[in-house]
Image (cartoon, rainbow, N blue to C red):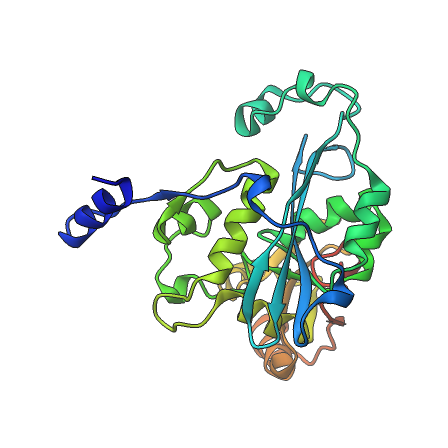
Length: 300
């Protein structure tokens, strides 16, 4: 019996779920087309991922970059995925053992390697949007690599798709992939990008809507970042319960609780701060953010 027939037989019993390996061989994908040759209504995007020596772009280094071009339509459909761009880079010091354990990338693999910045700029300049599964992480590393990444709108497949509402208990790519019927080698940049795009192509289990449609909707929206400095200590649990996050100022920004909300909910949030946190009229700092600044250090 053919392997697919065996898998279908098992699935038909209702007692088994079969995971299929995600195709990640670069030779199986077509080269990225010239944007001028795209059919009407088709746009070019990039899914990006980095592997790094630490969590902090101020002190660490990128050791691997992948960018996978894809075409999409305005109504939220991924049309085609193209050959990944994937390159390694030697960092300024030894790769920590924990990073090698996580990614499989060691010092010997990156010795003498560097990312071709001209190629990076050439590819990014043709894209209309950059997508990452944790855009607040990858964007800051990539802006350090090249200013070209500051010129594009960004979207985050981790935070801008309502995964939990759709029944996903865990938001990692590996878990969402398994729930979607496939597995892949996580924590290698190209594989992570290809997995993310496969996930973004599939209809969500409850709404039937494509995940990328949420990202395109978010990329057109304006959000407001409200900062709440000098709040009473005894009311921090109220802020945490409302999903405020704490900035300790270590990145040069103001020490404050903060939250990002849709623009239409701005007055509601100010009323909450006045009535439940400060207990007096306040005019908190507010910054309006588009997808050009969202997830960037510039938005802090």
